[in-house]
Amino acid sequence: MTAFPLDAAFPLDDRGLLLGDGLFETMLWTGEDLPHLDAHLARMAAGCETLGLPAFDLVQARALCLAAPGEAGLAEIRAAVRLTLTAGSGGRGLDRPAAPVLRLAARAAAAPPATTPVDLVLAKTRRNEGSPAARLKTLSYLDNVLARAEARAAGADEAVMRNNHGDLTCAAAANLFWIIEGRLFTPALHCGVLNGIARGRVLEAARTLDVEVHEVATGAEALDEAEAVFLTNSLIGVRPARRFEGETFGPHALIERLGQALTA
Image 1 (tube, rainbow, N blue to C red):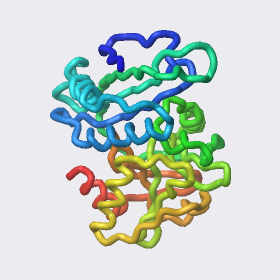
Image 2: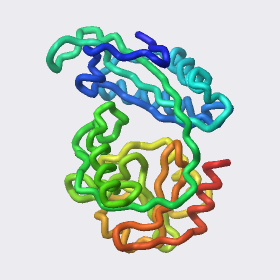
Image 3: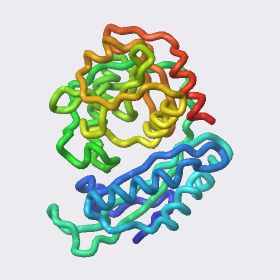
Image 4: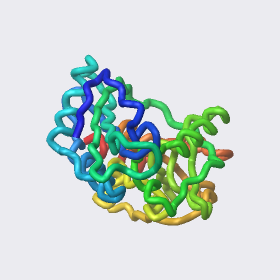
């Protein structure tokens, strides 16, 4: 396995660059540590197994992630650390080498906390629930890029995506939740949803608070019935929505409680 320094460029025959053949994880550096590093590494390892890639060196990956904030001069502030894994170099075409030599690299960038509610729009770009990639953080993230571009063009912050059946899935870079009559809803993983680290923590916190939780397959009309909507990922934690299409949402006590639980 090859590890890259912070300022290195990947070679032009790298399969991650040419074909999106690889995975990534984005995690929060608090200014002191990476509190959920083990969970992110475990998810990347599971992704390698799904994609038929060899196991990577967990010790090396951990060291790269922990060193990245200091190498970027961000050791004492809140930062995003991205760990990138590629299938390594390969020849022309789709076939991998018989024994891929993986590449790992980690970078850090400042990540101030999100302090305002998010405005959402429904994207036309769909997620392919039949693809394993829909449930992994692969280097092929073009659908998410296009959905985010739709949101920006509409004057919104983030896009809500559906799958090919019209079921809600996620935002372009976050998991999606909504609240109806005090019950918590989120799209089921089989809809083509990434099993987010923050998503799992929210579900655990909700059950600890004795909140009824439902993982569902449903269309966007469910958000019309919601009293509150919010997004989660490892960087934003819990971020409430202010608007979705014609709906407007105010503060909600359950969102505040879940946000406090994740912060704690």
